[in-house]
Length: 314
Length: 288
Image (cartoon, rainbow over all chains, first blue to last red; front, side, top):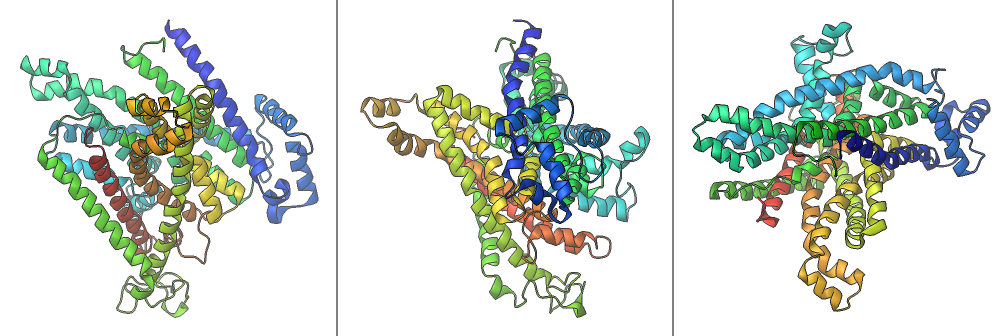
């Protein structure tokens, strides 16, 4: 079975998940207690606004027909109309998506830069002092609320030392790199414990493999052995670990964007929650779901491309 | 979900005795940390005489003193007292919140693993759909829809959290159901319910318990994060997330207001992670 049909099969498997994601987002409306329109609008409720929502969601139709309407609009790129901004939710979201994508990619890069050396240090001398020190990192790191880490970094590196801007997105690539460093570092710190643990384990697994014993017996020096043989084979699991945790990574951006006022879809979501702008919240939830599904697909394909042992006919 | 990968550590080779000792020490120190924290929040009325909600505008934003061990916040409330009573709320909600997904996930995971076929397919597709949403996105969206407060936290954490338990238990059952004792029970004519409940579950539940330790940490973080955003524990109830959010406005002048509750979260997280690691070593001797 060839590469193309592998990709095709993976795409086919996506269909039920994608349908499920739309069902979950669709049902958000129906989980709201009472008249969803009146509840969502809260103090902003006027008969006119309630009527707009009822018409938008087709609330007087049967459930299946409502869902069909929702899907139909979705296929036309229509996520509904913001109740606050007087713009379509899709417009609002697409304007803010770049900042979030920046944050996700920047954070993934920083997480790799932090995790790979630490995992290597730990794995190179198993049960040594440095190994134990590195193993403490996840124990502490997993209990740290990302928003709190963000606040501390803000305090230390922005408010006290003035090395980085306190908030914002910056302008141009240089500006983005500087302004987004602290938010990305925050997400990376939240992600690193998981990555370090998995990487350390997979490096230890590689170290125990027969071909490493062979390479050792050929007299290849330790450093070269590690870089050429161990690291190369441990990078593949690293990609997978990052892929598995993409939901965590993307969810982390949601919180961190609000600490650093990054104008991404996470900030849009929280702002919209406080303004009870339901269509926008719904739209962002859907986009987040789609983002995770797409990245998972890309990880699978990257995995298959990186590792010749992965067969395409699974 | 993220934490699943924590416990699927690749097999390591025989560990020297020193490493084993380290793990046991981990379990003990984790238990000690959690015991101390639990004692402090339960005995809060004995450890502080201040009402955590009592405002005193004459003593706002004070540093630590004999009267106020950790100082006061912007409304003159005693930080030490708020820390203890806030911990009470957060830990109580977290420890209760972890039970529902544990039970739901274990039941659905057992059913999926044991019966297989279309039941398995349906449950696992459900897992795929929940996992498609980032943890915080789905939790925050659900709490928003259901309205802030503890009930919504329980529902949201259950809806999102069960999938990890289901995956773990299903995987374990798939292996265990082919073992001879299960085949013997089946040929002995025992009912499926009895086989699952009396014979399979006791053998596979340890994995879920180990995972529950890291899951509580995640739940505490979720509760604190929701409260920080104003969607979780509602004032006037004290809570670590609200404390951090309140302190944020005074970050440059009174950094301790933000730092202290965060340190409390980290200490609890450390204690639970140590217990989880220690338990993993104790209950899965063959693997690590």
